[in-house]
Length: 143
Picture 1 (cartoon, rainbow, N blue to C red):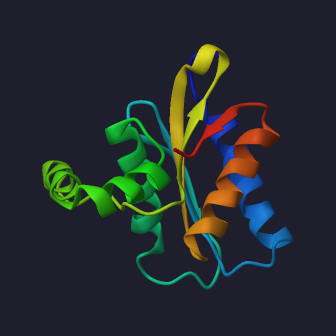
Picture 2 (picture 1 turned 180 degrees about the horizontal axis):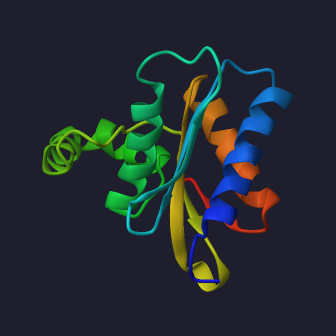
């Protein structure tokens, strides 16, 4: 598999939302992007706050922009704040450097896209992303 199809993106999205319900998390916003960074699927549960969608997108977009999960970007931001700040300026502020942005990899580690989730703690957002990717037999790369 070399493409993140709409059908697959929707399955990942649905899996993330289901995981959030199972974990009894706060309402989530979920963005699934293909390897080009284009939005394939998005949903926000009832009750999410106003900018959760943009945050979810920023977590996924940041992961794709730097080729690493947002957990690693978070660590780099702590160690190399100027670098992450400069990259964020290059992408016009679209990078959100906290856990919850997870790369989606297929066979032979091929990059298919990324998922970003926002709504609960960053660790819980990331856990939902990882579970959703695993549920469709792909590899989650959180960083």
